[in-house]
Structures are given as C-alpha cells and as structure tokens.
Image (cartoon, rainbow over all chains, first blue to last red; front, side, top):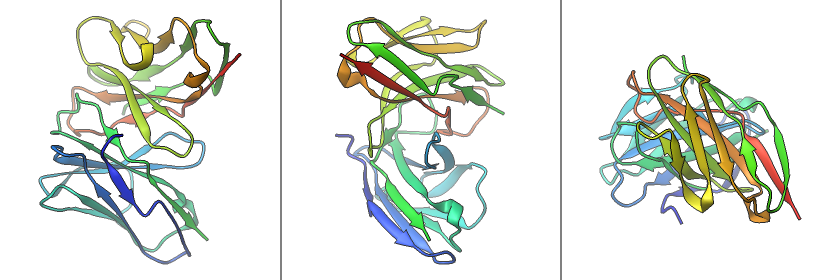
Length: 114
Length: 116
C-alpha cells in the first residue's frame, strides 16, 4: 500500500460543470504531482505543488488549477469540463523536487464527462 | 523536449521464459529513467530507476533494466517470467539538466501477457 489516497474514486459530470479531486500524500512527503491518464495512454503531467505553490506545469490550460494545503494534501480543480477531460486522474507524492526519487501514486479518480 | 517510445503495444511470453520490454528515450541533458507497472484499475507502482552509476539496475520483483546511452535505451528485463507479472508497463524519463521537479514523460505503455 502506497499511502497516497484519492477521492472520489469515480465520478460523472456533464460538459461545462466543475470538478474537484482530492489527494492525501504519503506520510513524510511534501510534494504532490497530478497526472492525467486518458484511456489507452500513458500518464501526462498536469502540474506539481511544493510548499503550497505550483512548481512546474505541463501543457494544460488554465482551467486546470490546484491547491496544496499545509498538511501537504492537494486538490485538483477543473473548470468548464469538456468531453476530452474524461480520464483517470492520478496523484503522486514524493519528497522534494529533485526528481531523482520515485513517485508514489494513488489509485486515481476516474472522471467521466458526458 | 523529452520523449519516450515503447515500440510494442503488447508482449507475450511463456511462464519461465525471459522477458524484455523495450524503451527508448530522448532528452536534452542526462536522463533520469524509470519503470512503473500498472495493474487493472490501479495506480502506478515503481519498479526501478536509473539516475547515475552502474548501467544495470535491479528493482522490485526480480526486474532489472539496462541503461544504454549510445542507443538511448532503457529496456526492462526479467530472467524468468511469472503469470503474475502480467500487467501494463510504463517507461518514463525526466531531463536531469533542466528543472521541473517531478515532471515525468511517460511512454504509451506495453501490455505484458505471461501465459502458462
């Protein structure tokens, strides 16, 4: 068990709505990264949070935003949902931002946009 | 820009036989390379990594991988496959030269099927 927990596990939204996904990082980890995994694809980096600030972003529009809280947990918010946002959203925690350590992934939140 | 290629969508192997899952990469600086495994409806689990040092790295569950700088490859191997190894395997790379913390670029994955 990795210790990274995500909620909800599944959710269905309609186009145009907003969604918030939550992630609790593994104990001792201070960095959270979010990835989007579309069906049949590898995960794509959305952004990373370190010390409650965004610290690195992938090729995703501003309607994808996030937060990190003092206890290192994190939220991913997506506004104005589009059909293509349907995917598995993975949260990963780690210690630091050097990028040399492995990421510990949660089991993901599967979002379906109708 | 960094990229990863996993040329095989699926690899089939008989239990007890050696297995290889291929990965090639492209980065600007020195590569940080990773292998992750994903079981159905689960998140990714770390298998092994290459950061620096010995080109042959050993990881979890008997897996190993060889870093080949001239061929820009990082193939995953196991001497004797088990049915329980059947899963989706992802290779990932991070450019060690630039910043970006934990921004990994993943390949599209290779489905490994081990049969009795």
